[in-house]
Length: 282
Picture 1: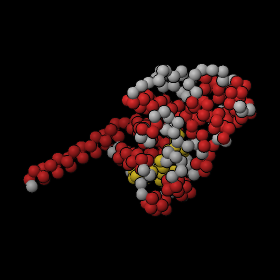
Picture 2: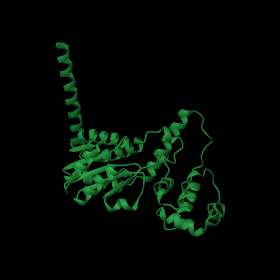
Picture 3: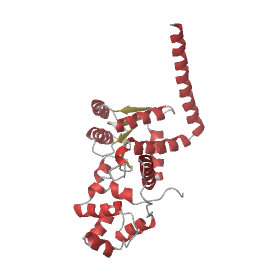
Picture 4: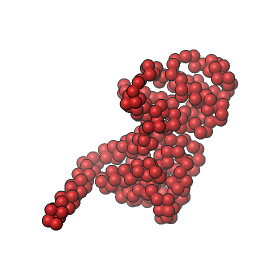
């Protein structure tokens, strides 16, 4: 694929909160750097006033065996940035493209395949989130419901607590928390996991503790380090991830699921036609 470039930057960002102050200094250097230079351990250590051992620990926290492997990936995928783009429209579009590149770097197709297996096996599916994540949960409910999935979205705090009581091995619970700190969402996942349900967390934070109560953790790009990220909806990376899951799910038994989708649209259109006829008679 020519347009998208594998990058270590989103991996650094997803682990950012794990880093010590020294390691965050290292992370900031690699995130903000925009020119080719000597990335050897000696050169970077001298530039940042850190030890080569700190570079090694930083690389290992990012999931690499050492600094040499990390910097090889960084140099391999390094793309020299063009001259600054003027105009808000171009800046926003450029930020969206950067976000898509980061999504491409984080996507794990084997994980998406597993998640679709869980969707096929679950008798009941629940997806929860607060704020903009709650809106994304509603979108997921609407789309999957149209192709035959027994799914409900949960946005209310009290309902999340109540629903946690009724989960079992036949349930699949998806939680959306970009910050990874939404207490109500994490509570539902923890309680559901303890009762045997499959649990999935969609988040921009890679925390080891999530593995204690999540069957799968789906990493999405963080807007925090993104240029012009403050004008991009926080829903966007979540919706992109949901689109990917949806496309894989539809591909399995595609004819049946497309027919279900068409039938639900037809039912909605018939309902609207009947309402219009009633209004004309009034």
